[in-house]
Image 1: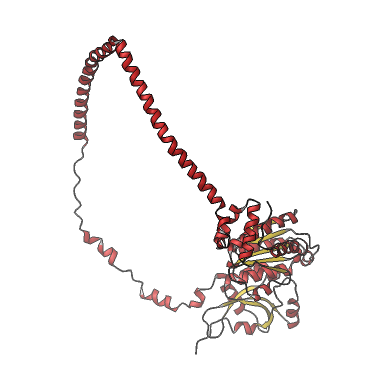
Image 2 (image 1 turned 180 degrees about the horizontal axis):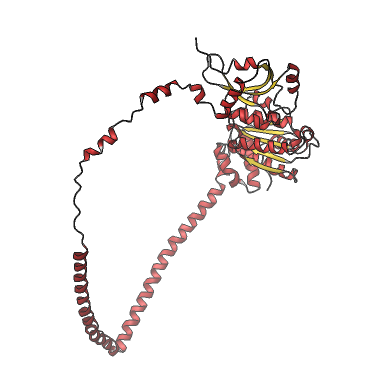
Length: 434
């Protein structure tokens, strides 16, 4: 069946996105305010993309698979040499296409991190297609994805475009396939009522004809049953008039056999009933246990267990109050990083790679970039803020020149910032509020 578009411009944009992914090394952000229309055009886009990439693999992911995507990307890059990972190569040679549906539910930092990985390691030959519904993504987020990211904004159709779309669907017999989508988009009101009710009128006419058939056939069936019953009764009366001795013998035979059959059964059933009754009575009397004695424990004994509150010793409560909240919230690896920073020798240089609001984000960045393999996650505190942020620290370096040379590595997320060990140590503990 042919693909249905609301306007020719939508088809042209779709073909441009297919060509960009398959031949120009581009990634695509598909955005639409309504999810139903996004799914309609998204499936058409993926079908054309499969035809354009016979050797590539399309994989579908959800927003919760961000960690899996970064881990898979890291594994692919680690299997290559540095030169292969940094070299783009043939743009039409696509290894995998990752389709992330409902990408608008992802955290912005996860999308930014994925965009940085794709820009720094084009040799992975991975393309990404993001489906975003709802509000339009911010310009900062799209800029973070880099220059190799195409954008396809799907606009909602107007009344004339909806009527043209419906006529195309009726021509190809696909009106029932698109009816649910148009109802979700509340566009069926733009379709003329006469065109909408064509199929419904046919189905209602068929129902009415079936009702008429049922009304006509019901009396016929009743009349036929009465005729057959009258014929049977008439035939029975006629046979009884011709041969009355047969009915007489049947009558006397039934009367003679009834006493013989019923008397023994009545006599046998009576003893059986009596026997079973006496047996059950004896069994019940024999097996009936003595009534158990009622419990004499008072109910008030269980109340102190429920109502008595548990009290901590004074020493334990005092020790718990002395524990620093800033150390309780830190993971073990962050505590190790803090201890490592405290034990750094004086007059050393460090390279700090950004500050992250959560420990999990810092771990994701560390796993994603091979250059951060030996870095430490160190918790630091801003003035007058009780919660820690996490920095990735590489080093220590004995000279400033060696630290600056380290920042030039291509396997780092960003050049980083060169700082002294004294600068890092001054931020390891939360500062008191004035």
